[in-house]
Image (tube, rainbow, N blue to C red):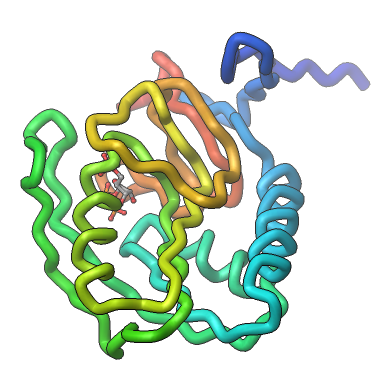
Length: 199
Ligand code: PRP
């Protein structure tokens, strides 16, 4: 049986490329579920090491971070609790500096606690800069950031994640929590939309 798979090389950085594989019309996989699982396991091990046995509060930023938080939480071997926040979601083009608004606050105080903010993607940095400032006002013991994806070329605010899954160029990614008009969040792989996407 002959099986043809359509692939193309995508440059992630000057030194790194990956093979994007078409899975159906209009969608190609950039990072497979296995690559994600392997990287999340490594991030979990690093976070576990850095906590040195202390407790952790994992704060997911809704909605995109939900799958990443669920997997990362099971990869850290510490006593962890969850909390969630949500910020206003403007179209990126309309978002101006400082225009982030909190639409769901933390349920529990974080004073004196080790806090890990969990994000699917760090893009302009506006969301995480806003959240970092907000959370620091509560005086956590430590405040760290885990971002599965990082787009450093898009940054408008000076902020870096402490733990990054994959650094990518300015590609529009969907799947594993990330959406296109609320669709595709449940794709198990991180994908790109191709020009022949039906919509
Ligand atoms: C995405 C992502 C981050 C934010 C990053 O959320 O989940 O929260 O954008 O972008 P920034 O660095 O430019 O601020 P989005 O607003 O799309 O909401 P969602 O998670 O509900 O999809």
